[in-house]
Image: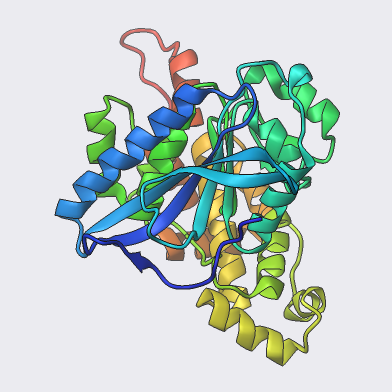
Length: 358
C-alpha cells in the first residue's frame, strides 16, 4: 500500500518544480467527469505557472483506485502526469458519487489507505456524497464538514460526531477539506490551485475555465497554510488535535502529553516541524478560523471569539487587528458573504426623503 514520503519538492524532467501531487480517487459509481474536470483545472494552472511562476512550477496529478490482485484488494495508480517520479501525495480528492449515500459501499482497504495517508501529512478532500467515504474513516469526527444539502441529514445521522454544516460551499480545515454540491469540485480545485500555485495562477485558471473564483480565497490578507508534510507523526497528531478543537484551551504541557514528550522536547520538535512555536501556531489557526466565520456567518463577533477559544473579546479584537490589519467588523464589511446576502434579502425600508438613523 503506497505511502507518501517526507522528502522535499521534486523537479520534473522539464526543470519545473513539482509543488505537490494531487491524487484523484476513482471508486465505484463516482462522478468520472469530476476526475476529468479536476485534471483539466490542474493542467491549465500548471501550464500557466510554468511560464509565469518563479521558479516554474506544476501540480502533479495521479489517479488511484482499488484493484483486485492475487494478494487481495490493493490501491493502485492508474494514471500519472509524472510517472518517472516517486509518489509523494500532498492531497487526495474524493469526488462525488452518482448514487445516493444509501447505495454507496465501503471498502476497508480504501479506508485504511486514507487513514494512513492522513497520518503522514496528506490533506484529504471530499466533494458532495464523497464526504461519506471520508466520514467512514472517522477522521471527520469533531470536525466541521459540508456536503450536498440533500444528504446533510443522512450524514449527521450516520456519523453523529461530525459537525455537519450544509450551508457552506467549501470548508477548509487545513488538513481536511470538504465541498458541498455535485459541481463543487470546481471550487475545491481552484482553492487548491490558490494554495499550491498562488492567487495569480488561480485567477487566471478561473478566467480560462469560465468559473467564478472561490469567494473565501479573495482575501487581501495572507492565508495561514501550516506545514503538514514534515514527517514527524507525533507532531502531526498534535496538529490534528488542535485543528479539531480550536475552541478548547491548549497549554504547552497538555500538548506535550498528547505527543508523549517532555515539554521542552515538544516545543523544540514542534518548532522544527511547523516553523512556529505552539503558541504562535494556535493563534494563527484561531485567527484563520475566525476569518472564515466572519466571511460565512452572521454570528456576533463576541460569539466568534468564544468559538475559536478567546473568552476575552477585547484580546481577540486586538490579536485579529494585529494579524489582518483591520478590526473584525471591518473585515466582515469587506468580505462577509453572509452579511451581504442578509442585506440583499432585507433591504432598507426607509421612506424617501427620510433621514436614516446611524
